[in-house]
Length: 416
Image 1 (cartoon, one colour):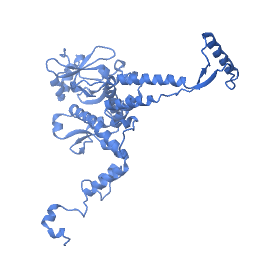
Image 2 (tube, one colour; image 1 turned 180 degrees about the horizontal axis):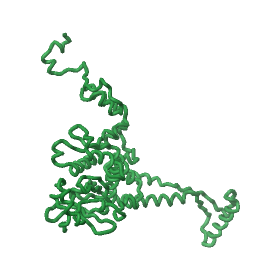
Image 3 (tube, one colour; image 1 turned 135 degrees about the vertical axis):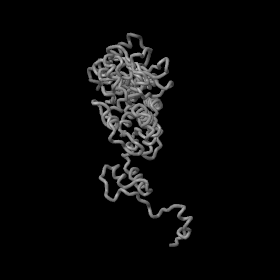
Image 4 (cartoon, one colour; image 1 turned 60 degrees about the horizontal axis):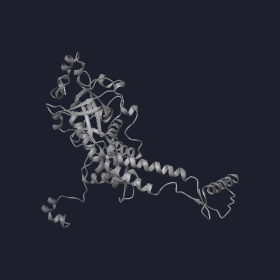
């Protein structure tokens, strides 16, 4: 792979030198780092604006992907230094509010997760202005991005194929990449392809059920004759029956020669269809690592509260996904020096549990009584103004330290 006209790894890391380098590279368009010119125009129109070709009109896949993407996008993401939010940093506003002029943070992460859940990979391009400053983050069509290892250095590059024009290569420093699950570390497995047989079988069952439904709308009739009839006799009996049926509107039927008519009622929906749907839900849930009850299968649900169900979803499903996004943001948007100083991006997973008012109140009560949260910190979680007397940590008078009882044994016996 020839990469002589593209920024090298060392140059990518030395962002501070971009301003002086760009002046020298303006005459070499192919050597420029990602700019507006590479991303704008109809030649790079994302697939989700042209039409969706991956969900295959499957409500199960749509349900699974939307559950995960909605949960991720509902978690506020902030840049922290230690335990303090760094609100003055432009990257905090970019990631937490407006990654690019066309998207909010919610739309941005929902789009990335929808791509990851349907194509196996989520990509976002880091856009720089001509002064070398990070300008925005823009989603990339995963079908037009191909990870490639450079032969000499073994470093990861991405080949991007626009609708028009020649392919171009970008170093992994310029691309945020979150794969679904990977066997080589940089190419995600497409979950829809894994479920292809399940989806195809489910589609065939639904088509069969639909045909049965059309047949079962009207009751069918069986004519029983007392003896074996010839071909012509059978045709005459059916003809006579249909003529009488049509003339009387089905109200009066005259049957001769011992012929009996019986209604044959077909069930419009095969009961086995529900078993097939249950199996399909279970397989989709396993591939996307989500509890089956979130896809409508409550057969094995044993939780006593909605909070326990949500905790299962957060711990088993969302925690690994959130960790992958946080580490990629920390690696690609923060320098090593900033990470050593304690800078980090954090998704607030507690925001998902705010709907449980009783648990939320109990947590704050225990935190205040335990002395590790002030009343004003609890009030802030409810969006209320600070109280003048709420900035101090409180402690319960019925608690003391073990050291105090050892040094004052009379106090433990009720003495004064």
